[in-house]
Length: 211
Image 1 (spheres, rainbow, N blue to C red):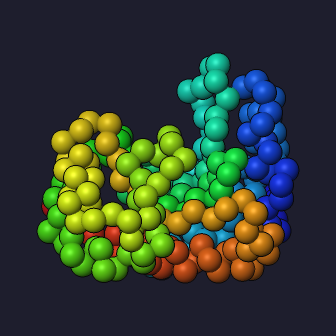
Image 2 (image 1 turned 90 degrees about the vertical axis):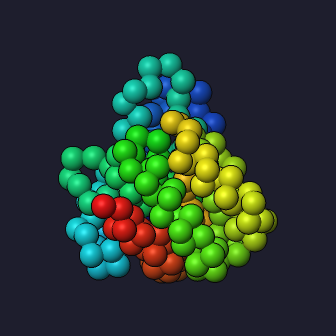
């Protein structure tokens, strides 16, 4: 397996390559091996934090037939068979930034129940998640909202949407700008991932309150 030694400009510029085939080829040869290496290193850490054995899944973008992907990732989940239906963790990148997430995406059959659990612990959740962490309601878009910029009503609306809208999702974590020096430093980046997952494991543990 490719050893991860930091990200380069070239990794982010993959998303400037035109055409599905050419971009996928560059992703598979250049970016996916790095993400897999990072996830393999972090799997034991997440296994320890969550109490569930974590398995690595690298995004294959298999459903794409025309448009090339604008982001890519490696996911860690408690099943060898897949991750999309499960609460999981992701490390990935858009052209502009790296993301490190806890994710409950629209395929999850427990997302409505999870929304209720988050509402029950809403005050605690807001206190636990650092101000500079971000929330997203759609993993297919690069934008996200800092925790400090969400008022209580807006956060409740996010949870209401998760509970009632079929395609709704919730993701929480951090964004790191592509120019941040931490991305060039293997150890510093892996430490940042560990630190972030340590915080986000709280959101994962809340899924265990679902019957």
